[in-house]
Image (tube, rainbow, N blue to C red):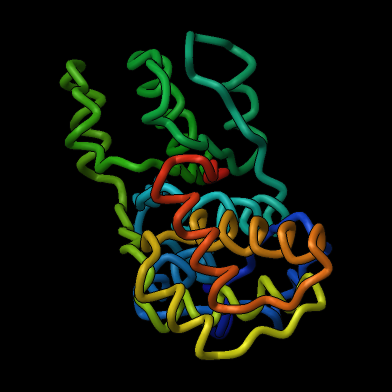
Length: 235
C-alpha cells in the first residue's frame, strides 16, 4: 500500500542544548535529500533492506532515530546469532546502527534479512562504508546485500554547514555574526560532528570569559581543533 508523504525540508539534529528537533526545524541540503526521501517514503521502499552510507557526523543516526520513532523499529545486534533477533524481525521493522564499526556474524545477518523478507517487514542499516567494503565472505549474504537499496549521504556542503551552525548557536540562544560563521565554515572539517564540536567549544569559552563571540575567539577554537585539543564528538 502506498503511503508517501511530502519530503521533509530540513534534517533534525540532536544536540545538547535543548535543540529544536521537530519536523519543521529540519535542514535539508542536496547531499541529504535522497536519504531524507527514502526515510519519508517508508513503507514504499524499493526493497525490504535499506542501507544509509555516509561519513561520520553526516546525519545517519539522526535519520535512523526519526525512522525508529515513526515506525516503532527495534534496534538489533548481530554480533552473534540470536533467535530473539529473528523474532523481532517477525514482529516489525528493525534497525542496525553503525554495522561497520565492529565485527558482525555474517550468518546472523543473512538469516535476519531472510526473516525480514519472509514476514514482509523492513530493515534499516547505517554504515560509514558501502557494503562492498564490509569484506563479506558468505556468498548468500553478499547476494542479499546486492539486492538492498543503498543510499549515500555525501559530506555536507558549505551552505548546509553554515545553516547548521546558525541553528546550533540559536539552540544555545546565541546570535553570531554571519561573517564569523562564513569564516569558520571556510576552515573547518566538512562534517556535522565538527560543527557541533566547534559551536560547543566557542560557547563554552565565551561563557567562561563573559565575552562576546568574536573572530579572534573563533580562531582560537580552530587552532585548538587543528592541534587536536578539541575532541569532536561523533554519533
